[in-house]
Length: 369
Image 1 (tube, rainbow, N blue to C red):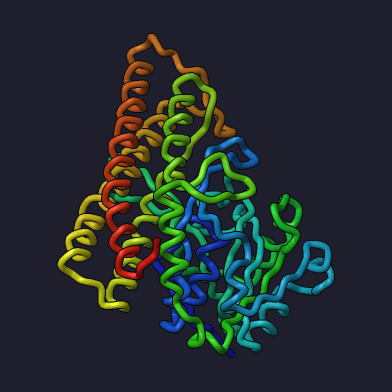
Image 2: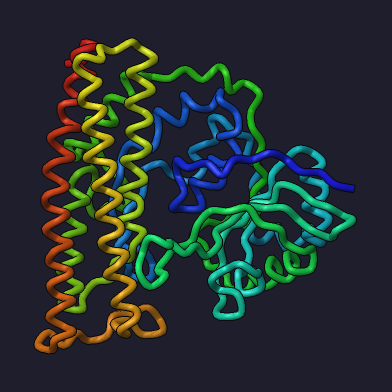
């Protein structure tokens, strides 16, 4: 017996699991595109529980409830559901996707496999009882061949997991799970009224204006909107003096964010027949300069991060080791970090100029003061 629910390895939002997994369930249905194009506009920066500088979208956890049915099962209640294998069977048979926490130490194709205990979300969308296999989607180790030395990052991908591997990964994951939310199991389903969601151009424009002018507030923010760049540069400076930790996810999300905004701006331009005499060149500049250079900035830091790891600038816990600023290697690393900060400064100026022009064009078209 076999049953598989469809999902999409969508390319819009991938960096954080709490966004990417529900969107992969939503994105197979074109009726959800208006909702997606209206969201994920504003960014904020914060320090996570490990003391690492991060950037994320301001959408709160479970914000997708307005277009999805979500059943939450708490950490405590999850202990009484019985065998996870039977639980998944029953959910899939009801056309519900299962989002659960697993310890990736026990799962093949994971960077943590047999290396260290690392809990993360995993989506199960199907099963094959004859083959004793679950079908799912999660983050697997991805090597970017365009980067020298085989550097890479985790990438959202489809997986096949044996019943026994999932059971031990789920059961053992409970021993290492520390939050941040009490929900340990989620059942996800698409609402039947997706076609009723109406794209709100005014709301999107106000969000874009808030991003480029650094307006707004998030409960955990260090900075919001364009100000995240200055915050990022400050923490890069801290890396020179061994005070801060920044990983490539902060840079990845900046590239992802620009790709997503380019789609939203294109969507609103086409939907409302904006003049291509003015918006066309702005969209072209946004794609060829802002989106492309955001990717280059991510690669620039990823190369530094990889070289720093290879020369043991980090200990086994991911903490920065003291940097000998007078050594040849130390001076080279400081030079690399200074180049990254210069790239951030130049990029910020370019993005603000082009995006402000787009915001002003949209405000003029929709007569927003």
